[in-house]
Length: 224
Image (cartoon, rainbow, N blue to C red; front, side):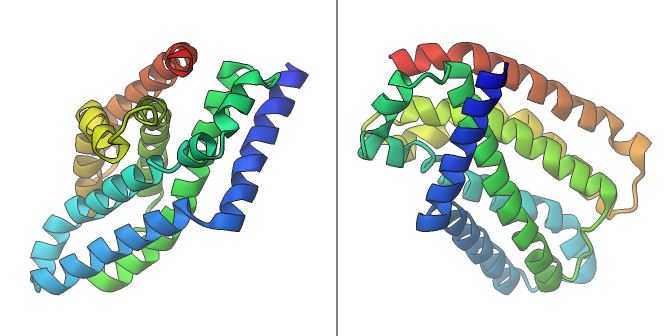
């Protein structure tokens, strides 16, 4: 267990250091998400009531598509620099490699989202700093990162990974996207925990299934 944790922490730290040097993943997520928000803000010119109705969809569109852009990068450097073979030959288990990449992706996305949320609040004049909303954000991002890391590993071996990843990935995460959008809208309209409990349960079940499935199948994906 100590060796597993050591390998896991080492892999996460390696990705963080590489990101601090290159700033590719967080920069790509932030750039796309902020550009999406600015375009929506300039194009809609909506009333406050319309903004309240459209805000959940706009917020999650920016998160999801910017997140997909980030997912395309998590294995690119490993593949292009020949590091992927080195990872496979290292003492780290396949589960540690998967968890390292998954937690790295989760950390990068949460950092980007923490910057995007205040910008969204300013542009659309909507308060998003609610504990229940933050819970939905974290749970949805966990599921997104769990299954996204697996599909990123699948897409990295294809010629058109930028196209294949969203084609394979988006249909799978539709349940949590729906749950996140509906729950966010309910909270913005003044809803309470009983109003979103079923959606949060759906997201949590998806997270568990995605995590277990990805952990069990990641080794086979890497071998292929």
